[in-house]
Amino acid sequence: ILQCILENKHFKEYPNSKKKGYYDYYEVIKQPICLDEIKRKFVEKEYTQLSEFVYDVRLLLLNCYRFFGPNAIETRRALRLEETFERKLASLSDEQRELCSLEATHGKLENVTETEPPAEDESKHQFESKLLESVEGEKATRLLERKQKLEEEIRSEKEGVEKDILTWEKDVLFTEEEYKMMKYMWEIPVIGHFISLSVYQLNIEIMPMYEIERMFLMPQASKGLARLMTTLLSTPLTRLKIHTKPSMPYKIWNKKLTLKVSGWFKIYNKSNNDPQVVFEKLGIEHQFWKIFGNSNPLEEYEFHQLTFHQRVFLVKTLCDYILQNHKLIRDTISEITEEFYILLGEDRSGSKYMYFPQFLNQDIRVYKQCIDPKTWIERDREHHTEALKTGKNLKVNQKKKRHKRRAWMLGKITKRVSPKKNDGGKLKKIVETKEKCLETGEVNHGTTESRADCDPTKIKITLNLKSVNDTVNDSLDKVKLVIVKDKDEYKMKSCEEIKSETENKERKVLYSAVWLEPNPEDFELVADSVEGLRRLLEKLCDDDVELIKKLVNSNLK
View: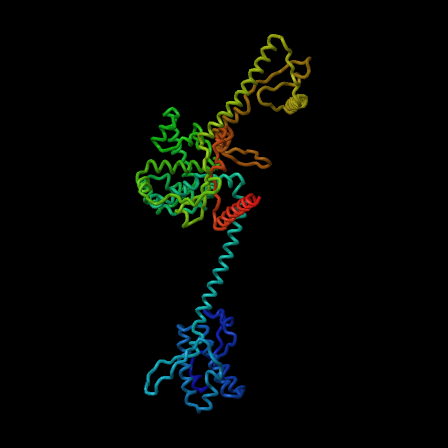
């Protein structure tokens, strides 16, 4: 029997765990064996009984079936070997066959169905291995377990990365004011809703709300905002081929946006600052002019330098402009028959809880809207009434000052002159600088005086010279690079850089309508995840339980 088995070329040596496909062989197979090991045991007379030899051969076959599974080429080779081995055993006597039976060597195997032996007349029949049947599904379960373990590792790693991102967001990206403003701004879901409804007409991928909420915090680095602004600032014809081209860099779309907004302001100024005329022409709401003022802030400031409220409202206004002026997008949105938002319910105060079904593929977002939110017109009126009150107080103070000045001029009161602080120190510095200049021969800005200025007996000499600033400004046009001292370092700067720095210093203060910023009592994002939704429901249920307890107590009393 051993000679017949050794004629087989395969399974002679132990598998190499470094070979491809065998890396986990010794983790799966706890009792490895090979034909050379069986031959060694036979030669050294380690087998005392025939059943021990049969057990080792079957163990070799069982290991192969367990590791490679039913469909591998190694399994087919092992089946041929088992068939010849079982035929040899069948030629033994009845007593020896009983000692070498499968139950005697390996006991009762699991997952094995008892079948009737084939009839003697059937010369040709397919060999069926009970060993293979007992371990047939082990490889599939092992691969499934490995896949689940890998998925769990990836999930835990992803959760760790998400936790790191959340901590980075809280510590670096979000300030408390910006995070609150993001929660209370109804314009952000409006932008997301517009994108989800016109995603095919804009020729853009669906953007999750998570990305839309955060892209306004880092406009220079956000790829999503660059993609969105590229399609919003393009014409309908160029928008058709926009997927074949890369997104515009920040500097380019910022310049295009500046030109677009300056065109809006020209129309607004030509219409004598009438927002109704602009609304009918362009679809820009009246609120836009209150938030941005009467001049284009992008002419002096870049997009990322605007306030968070202005950034969001500008993009929202651009969406309104496209909806009004691009017919294809307007028609597609008007043809939509499904509900734009779904009302979940109301709480005891009458506040509505709603969600947009278009967001559910990407995110969970539940918003709360109060029963009677204040309009921006009401808030603007309140601000104006407060400003008028403060203005009246200022006028009263100015009148008092004028009356005092008139009384002093008529001689009714004497004007009290309060001595300025550190005057002596300034005079001392002026004298020291004059003495230094006269000793070294250097010249100060404007006019310089000799030491004779201090001594009345000597003649006073005055040198009228051109100011150094004028000479520097004249030379800037000729010199390309200038050495400039920046803190403790000297740097080379071009004339254009110096001029741009001076221009930036002289620009206007950014107009910001603080009184029109979002009100937390009007609109709020209350749930942005499954966990957040669970917390919201628990909170509402706890409130109901407390109310029921109070009602029960009052009824008992």
